[in-house]
Image (cartoon, rainbow, N blue to C red; front, top):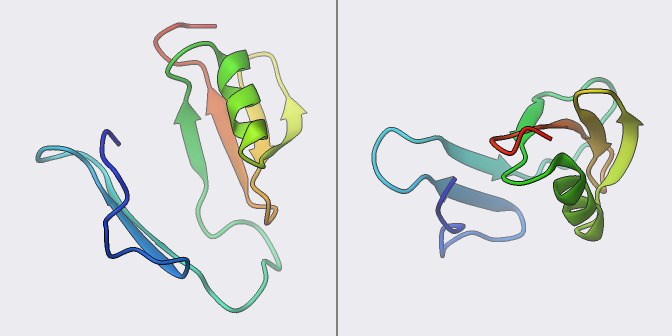
Length: 92
């Protein structure tokens, strides 16, 4: 988002506000119950560079590849929540 996590964020709640007005802002809140069905929210991320480099970076942060498709990769965070990584401006 072009910003840092809010300084008052904790492991149970975090807020990220985009730099400037009109950008995306998002709250992350930990809930006590485990995931039991589909994700409550699904993110599609665009790679700032090559798709392969972004997938590798996310793997180093703890995500895992679920499915590699021709035009995007489906990944899972350490808790099993799925998200997609798509090509960004680099177009790879």
